[in-house]
Length: 129
Image (tube, rainbow, N blue to C red; front, side):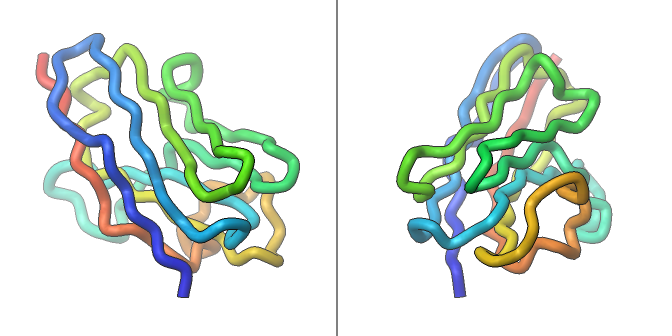
């Protein structure tokens, strides 16, 4: 069982920045994604934010965060980051990192939460206006 642990959440004002981190076991995933769950929304309403493929380094973003958020990973594939700039109140939510199994395919279906086997506990991001 691959364990994921998020950190880096917090409270910022509109226009502020945060960097989220997700710690995992080395070389344990084919793709890693960030999802967010907005206030008063259930587990099934988690929205995809961004993803990165372990091997190719290809990245994918939800339209509303393009140009503001950047996903990256370290060389040992033990850390995945989400740099969030120019934050907006609608970015508020619990952010989860999620990992696809190591030998699965990473690519265009990145936004489907059912393809991710392992999830972290989440880190809260609050953006005030």
